[in-house]
Length: 184
Image 1: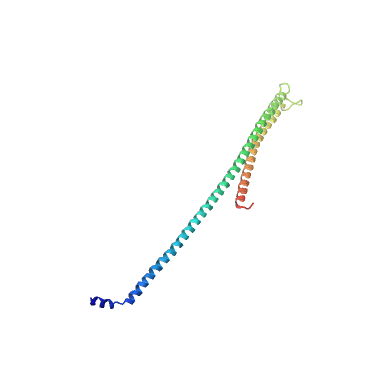
Image 2: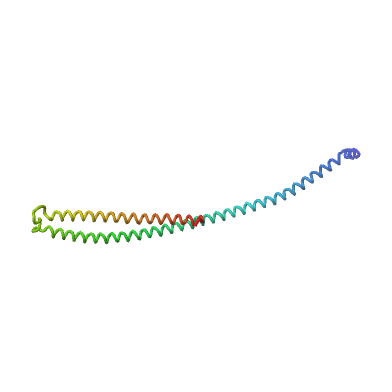
């Protein structure tokens, strides 16, 4: 048995003890560092989750704000379109009434033409062109001018109403954008 003890004595126990102690300290340091890093990772995961929740909340607020802005714009545009339609209907009713008055004027002019172009009164006393031709020309010019004025009035009413609606729509969009940006 001596040879085993002699061989054990030859082993550098001091170095082995230092190596074991170093390995133990390394393992303990590794474990402590792992726990520390584990807590740091948990903290980072919580921070990332909080940042994601905050970003989702901000995005939700932005979407809600955009939706409200869009709804205000649509409501304003709908009000403006309805008002323009109402104004157009009033203008069309006025145009129909004007056409009725126009027809009455034409009937009166036709009666005057018939009165001044009677067979017994077709020329002036001194001779010359028949009086009925001048009356007919005047009646024709009046009728053409009246029809053209009616067409122009309808076009003017339509363009005026469309221009006002366009201006109101633009103002509503600009006001809504200013309210959204906080400049008004």
